[in-house]
Length: 208
Image 1 (tube, rainbow, N blue to C red):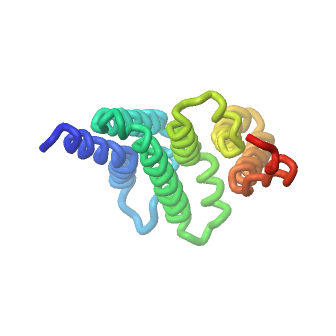
Image 2 (cartoon, rainbow, N blue to C red; image 1 turned 180 degrees about the vertical axis):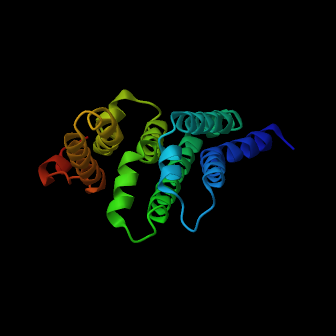
């Protein structure tokens, strides 16, 4: 097996670490609490609010990126960065989908309000996928500072501030924290999902 294949295999395993770590830890807590028909909300919140799980998962992703780049020949690294961006966005989407499913499962799939509350309070369940999307843009932009001015990046930063506002402000004034978190959530989604503004015909006709 070549060194590039070894790096590729190792990075593929590291990309799975955030999911495996959260799953194993959640299962451990669930067994301790007593296996039930639905996932206890306390287990969901413990996993999604644990900073060590978040840091360990993020570090594993960083190591995976490093190994992917080390296993790529110098002349192919620019193309590899684009591929890594797609991989990170796939990790973000998978993480967000699993977190949402878990939040609904912890509320019996019928308590939408409870699932939304758990999703907002479990801050790292939102921070991790948003951080992965932000990292994907920085990777594909090759870490150019100008990429931080991109509208999608601004939307992601707004999403990253949602759990921080709920935790830091909400523990003092719950209503204010939840209200600010909701505003940031809506703002981040709108800014991120809106299509880019088209240039005016005058600007498009200007010579380059």
